[in-house]
Image (cartoon, rainbow, N blue to C red; front, side, top):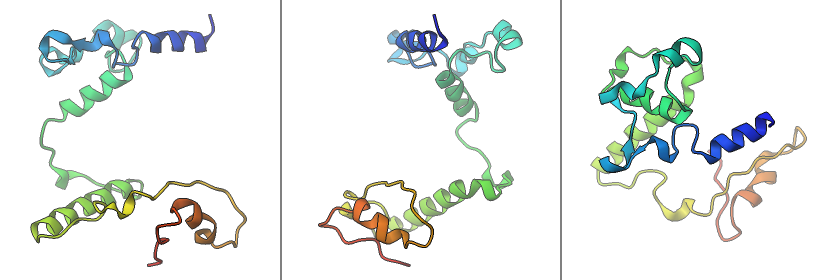
Length: 148
């Protein structure tokens, strides 16, 4: 059996931490691994196979997220250039909250975004990218993006 077959079989069996064996049906379909049982950490597996000792990537992700607790003091963070997406997302969320508090409609809520499509292309340097991508990103009934 090849590695691909093993992975496919594991996926078919619900491997990765989200299959039926990870669900507690008697407890409103919650995850079996949770903070109350230390996410079912297997110390032998932790010592010999994986750093976490938790079976499945999804179960590991869940443990990391839940173990942080409900509130994290973000003032202690030291974000850098690689965190630009995080910084931008937080700024947009803060802006959205202020907009709603002032009775406005935050960015990204209007139906004008429904026809926007993600496009990826490689083209020659020097061609204005909007000329190439706008027709494919927007349906003909929608105006192209405005240059800021």
